[in-house]
Length: 619
Image (cartoon, rainbow, N blue to C red; front, side):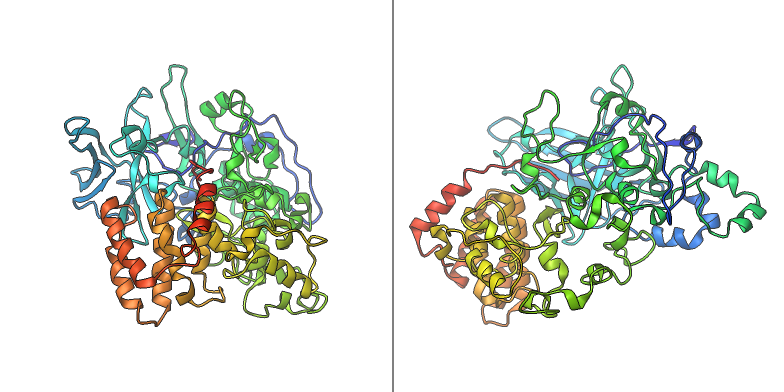
């Protein structure tokens, strides 16, 4: 059903965020400055009056662009059930039991259906908590989440993300708490189990749809609207009704000859700052000046603007009135590098290559393109791996003073991203590359235990002291002067120390590092390091350790490989604790102790440090 220029959506999209994407209010006539070689200025008043036309309208004149966009995961950010949505999960009576609760997924007469019950126990008889049809699916890449209409005071158009999701790669159901970095919680605790039952209307809608308007009324009910479900053409190019009207005349289309047109935004023709603002709207969590206005009418951003004109990105020191001063600190490493997904824009802003968003600087579109490259990460053709950097930097000038052109002594063993965009970011139950581009400097982390570094995330059997000395030997720039190493440097590798003594994100990223294909260490040497993480109190840590241990088991030809695979198949990172521990004991018997486990006093010291950091953060 179309309401004005937007479609009223009776569904909801679940996004793994702890803080809503709070955006600034209405635009106050911001003028746009023409830049030589980039898209010219246009009248912002005209573009604000333009309305959404939807991708079907765009398809008539731009069929190739429509098709290339149509295969991306942006299109399926949100799908309305019954409107051609691809539902990844079977919904054929599957049952997921977790922490004293049972979720049952069935194919209802009108739509997929999810029923959540508290199991009978000491706290009382069995009780139904949710019994709802699925109205929307969210995501189709790594896992798919589901949204249903539940009136909890927000009216008949109030929608909530449900607490279970379908993991596509593993073909299994997971509880949403396991996708977040948080402790397991007490058995039978309803508040814990339902923690991520999140309202779609004032949260998820803002980043997973085109032209979103939460529609919060004065009485607390919602009349939410989106221009189009999912991330469609006008999310990047802006409302297109004026553009469509302008080019309806065939002679006007002929005369245009594909040149820049002020009635629509073309990201590839914008300077890096405005071009990256289009992506940063969703790939960079933000804070709004007038939240009430955003909740009524949306953020008011029009592609082609500077995002800074209507919002400010969240950083470690960002504050919200009435909230703790360090509200966002856990989302960043001590050097302010983002350590969670959905902060890629912040990483870019911190990168010297960005150059303040000025012409000649690096923008998102340099590496990514909605209409070019593979749908998986939408990397522009020729810009994967080292190609992203060598398109600007001359290969002959790379490398250290003692290794000119030698790529820091690595040759072809590792590309630019491994060192300059290391995998120190967590999201969607895996490690991801950082979007803060910087040169590795392991010396600055010597004596510290609060942040991973690029070198030892690859050289997983080495210490930071070794990494710093190697940088110096290669003639590569780094922190001046040696630093005093901590005594623990002699206990084992940095990754092994993080496994036992790091906070939950460090443990996850250490586990992820061990099974990376570029790691120059045999699987047989490191498999035993992961066993302790199979007992971790954080479900997300157990999940990643289980995944990476399976990868290592597939990589080795040692005699232990097959019995190990059998045990890992029996292990469920989200299953009953007593059953998990039986399997862990069997795996430990197969692999033997790791270097830290053989020294109880070291293990106790590291675990005492681990227990100081209790995290409960989303992405």
